[in-house]
Length: 464
Image (cartoon, rainbow, N blue to C red; front, top):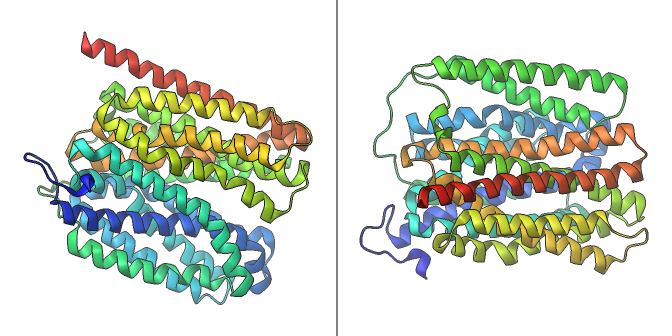
């Protein structure tokens, strides 16, 4: 296979060891996707099993997201001081052991605590996963391997609801966490075998002030997004308070980073306009995806009257589209302009979203599936080339930071998308709010296209 063949001058690991390292990173990525997608559908059963209220049980999902968001930037910074190998193995160990704790939980408080630990472990691995792939693969294959990574995530996203529903129909919710244990052991053995040590680690003081400010800012942003998804004046006030905290601490974080001798996140990583524009493009696209993933279940179930199972199946064409497009887009990005390919993907994505927004009042399932498939193909064409653009426009010593920025853009794009839907749901009737949300997703994608096209001007200037 060309992906694992070596050529003179290749960076990274030899071919066979590349494959093992890729398997370790992708196994962990699959675990995180499965964990997030399957747990949400198990919340009602968890509430009944632990005699907890639905509102309190939601923190099984929110606790994970909050702890992951608060630590993404910290682990990205630690990777340059401790090494990719140490941080990845730490995260993998914490995630796997916390999965054992989740499976053995006998109370809601214990389960939430274990989910918080899971989030910390997940953040440690997700923040540097793409950076590890860059460190073990040569630049000529970077787009291809990122395409395969997107393919795996798309496949896992498609399978997760079906697998989760199957497990819950025959076994208890604890088994949703237990399946992480063998996968975690396999990933651990592979990581210990092949994930390399960083050749030259930075023995530098840690930016504790930056770490605290980043954790508070990112955590407050998640809390604000969560509050926006609920209705009521008190929730709106809470969201505004958290939003204010996020803005204040975010500004303080930037101020500290500009003056710190060894900052948590070197702001010079954004000196490359291509990196910055790729990051902003990623943020806008994930805002769009976040809006759509929240709005569509309401459309399918509340407006069209489909069951929860049918609604899950109607989502399946989206990840299938990613599966079909992402590997080819990644290979093309290794040969041609990643910015051009990702812009084409965004354009297809925008068309698919517009078609979803224009669904008739009594839409047929096949019609919904075709429109969702187009969205998935467009997003699959966009994601891996754009990720390649981000990673390749950061120096190898900053690849851990770049990987962390990528994870932050994805996490907070989806959070902001959910917040927008929550605001619209509190203002308009449900049917109107859903359709306005879908058109807002189109607008966010158009913004992403504008940002992506701006990179093409950068290419022309560089060529000139």
